[in-house]
Length: 561
Image (cartoon, rainbow, N blue to C red; front, side, top):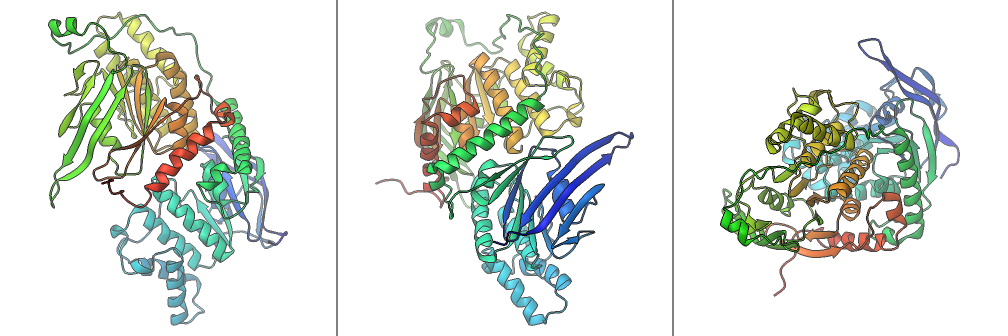
């Protein structure tokens, strides 16, 4: 690798002016040298200016001051030497894969013959594994495959530097892993200089030679640069046992956590939770209550031979079958598996929102047959009333389950949980004006404020960047430690599953998905991310879950005879 920088950033600053005249200082003196053939990952929090930085390198944004040079020449605008792939793939839907890539080739390689241009298009499409799909339109392709087309198009420009602006963040975990493998293959075969903007520590460590961490907004700088001296090739399962990987991962996570703590909203401790309990809005008959007076702690929730069949145009589809699970009161279960394995189906049936085909779900001696406030659900997309404030959104549920409490007590319940989730200064902000992360905080506050018997979390942080996700995981851990509500959380994130759960329930692939393995997480509570990474069992648990998911990478396993 050439030791002289191919790309050099010096004192790059950028501010934006709002309509009201307020100035937001986004980049506050970015310095970075990138060597030819090097793979740099830029890691940072949401809103830290990562896209502004990568757009400045691409010549799409003009810095206020400082310089960006490529091979010693100042970058003054867009150029074929910088191939850019955005988070959202901008493909022409009426053109085929070949035609979408050919557009870029014809724009920047006009000096080449028609046959040479056609050969270049085919080479780059084949490089991303889509030689078989040359004639297909974007509408016929999955999100992951469309993103491969965008990468092929950027590579076909034959740029000096390939710029990747969070190209994988909107994809599910399995598709993301497959595209990470494609990017690694491109790095190896093309020997191209690559800059990847990401919010995923593992993605950065799996792919990069160096990891540059940006400080939180505003006035972002590069806080530290870490050398990823991990032996290549880096297998995502094997690297889990690599001591260098573990050490570097712990160092970066600790640094990010420290930055996050410094930047977090102050938690307000003034409001105390009143001593009131919610009404049971649909109590069973008195004779039943008397017979079940001794609370069953070890069978608080029971899934018994749960089965779900959906009708389809080509016949019935069994999504879930023979799902058996018992939970004790106060237990936290993580449900993990690949997309389509029935995790959300099981959760929505537990919430009473999805009809059970056969089997049953029992909650505290009562069979679940309808939705109700005793089962609080937090979905991936928070279902808030956009015209209401955070306070009003939480108050809606509180008023329903605490009709016997005083107005002051209900107000205190709302205030307490909004404080707990870090929204002390945003209680009167409209949901429509909030970021995704803030809206999800409101959703968590609303769920906990209902004091449910069962808390159901369906990938509540799935739409968030991984650093905002960490923040909300910490919020969830902190509030759960206080309430110890019985909880089930659907997730794709292995670290999240282990951090939160008493047991990790691993699902086989669908159709006919069922429980494949249950892992008991014997780690002390309360849990802290930094402490967890130091625990000798953490990477053993992580490897066990990763190994299971790798086993089911390529479709459903046949049942043992």
